Length: 292
Ligand code: 8Y7
Picture (tube, rainbow, N blue to C red):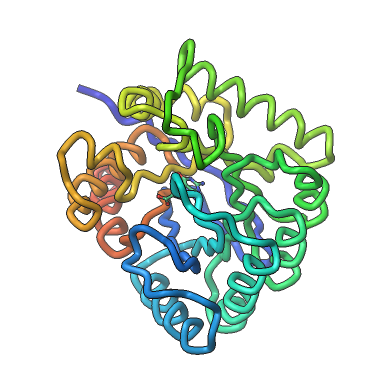
C-alpha cells in the first residue's frame, strides 16, 4: 500500500531567516490571549511577567525543534470575544520583538489586522498567518508592503457563527477554488506566488466529515503547487470522533500530524512541539531509509 505523497518543498526567505521546507517542519503555537482554549493559558495581559512566561515557552519550543513560532493575539475560537486593534498590537508586538532579539527561529504572526501586519514585519516577524486570507480592508496592501511570506487560510463564515451549519457542494473543490482566487488577488497586488503558503483551515466552518475529506484529499490541495500549512492540534473534530476533552487529544493530534505530513503538508502547526517533531521524524526516517 503506497499512501505517501510527501514531496520536498522550497526554501523561503522570512525576514532574513531561512525556512527550509525540503522536509516538513513544525510551527509552535504561542497564544497571547486571555481566552485561549487549549494552552492552559494563564491570563495574558502583556505584563512583563506574561512576556517572560511566553518567552519560556518560546525557548522550550525552539529547543524541541520548532522551525517557526506562531504568535497570536486574537482568539478565533467560536464565540471568542473580539479584541481591539490596540489590544491585539499590545499583546503581540513586544513578544515578537523579544523573540526576534533572542531566538533564531522564524516568527509568524497570526493576524488579520493590516496595521499589525506592517508593525509585526518591522518588529522582526518573518511570516504572516491570516485565517481570513487577507480579505480585511487594507490587508492585501499591508501584506504586500510587509514583504514576507504569507499563509492564506480558508474559512467559511466568521468565527462567531462558522460552525452553525457549514455547507459545501464539494468541500475539497470549494476550498481549492477559494484559495486559488486568493492567490490571484495576491498576485494582482504584487505579492509573488512564491511568497504564499496555503491552509485548508481545519475546523473553520467545517463539519467532521468536511475535515476528514480535506485531510484525505490533501494531495489535491498540494497539487496547487504551494507549501501547505496544516493545524489539527487538539481540534474539536478529535473531541467529536473520540469523545476526548482538550487535554486528552495529544495521541490523536500526533496521528493526524503524521497523516497530514504524509499527504503533503509542509508545515504542521501545533501546541505540542516536542511530541510532534518526534512523530513527524518517524515519517521522515521511513521516507529516507533507502539512504541509510
Ligand atoms: C489555524 C490557524 C488557528 C489553522 C492556520 C486553533 C490561527 C485555532 N487555527 N492558523 N489559527 N491554520 N494557518 O485551534 O488551522 O489553533 S486558531
